[in-house]
Image 1: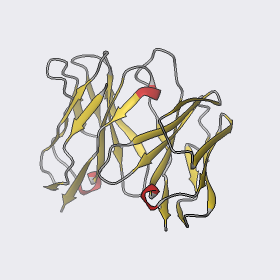
Image 2: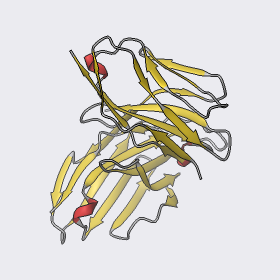
Image 3: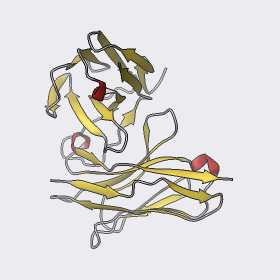
Length: 116
Length: 112
């Protein structure tokens, strides 16, 4: 496989469930990201990992917990979510170079999450 | 802070029509500018980019010119096809990809 792969593609979970989203990249990139895409809103950057270190957490509620065990894998652990958390969750990766602002990001197909 | 403004849409065009999707930005620094495209059921993918004033990015018949004086990066295509139906995101990056700011996305529907 090549590129960025996300699993599952679709997930329905209750508000008391615990689930995890998985992202894997085969591009040799050093940075990985989680985004939330909701209808009629700009893409929201949730978490950034660079060389497995979390470098950004944009005020995301603690019911979302990221994990980056190595530079190729990224997880988003979900616990006691709310219906308003229903959205498309996108993973991306890039080869981040300090001072360069033109780095391309590669996105996975996303996980469509529905919280009931 | 940085921001990107683009029309929300949907924009509906007939096949072979001319396309313009407007994008304007505000940034504290001297950003790079991007257009990403999201086809149905897919993630985003880079369509084109420009890194300095007056640069023109182009790909698959789409073009956009970095206009510093008007802080704009409008996307154009001379003749759209049904296969161009997708959501188009304008974005800017000041300090590497981690600081990318996306617009709301513009949905394009091309009808035969």
